[in-house]
Image (cartoon, rainbow, N blue to C red; front, side, top):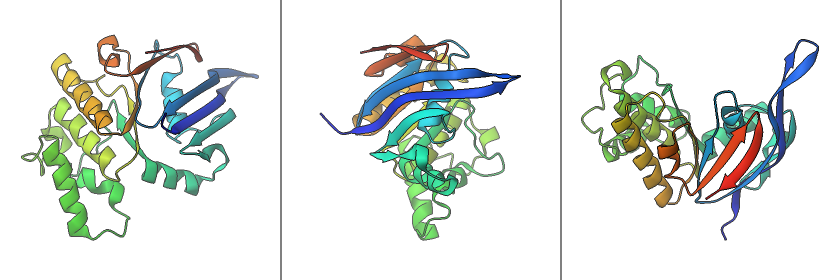
Length: 227
């Protein structure tokens, strides 16, 4: 058995609501081994994106412990959290989150912009990632000049730029037509076969079947963990 990349125990997230609190996540515990492909499913408002954002060090839990690659990230400061995100995690979002004024190539370069890597070397690496994803002829296109499927592939290339061990995808096919969505799911499955850990939030049962495990969440509670 491989070593866990994610270990979460009793994670909770609450937000103020008048004189009380509203819980988006309640006592969630899970372990993800290196190289797994895990899908998180649940209705809107169930807490699945909250859980994913905690795993991605974008949101701090109200309670519980979360370790990423053996390090307790719940104790880290903001600067250290930013370093963890940049070095260990690649993000793919439903709305792509590409900068509209930059070309596909420049968008992919962004995660490595402040590294010590020479500019030409960095740019060539971004070019190879886009070429691998079938976008070699779209390097200079801006997001508004790309289809939804193409934009999401640019986002995947950007997520791979710093060679992360963990890919977190939040509804990566949610804004795409069925054919484009299947292509993105195929791409994530291929990245997993290459050894990367993938944790994906989705409402689409067909897309979720690509994963090796499915976590079901409802009302902030993890209810089921099944192959």
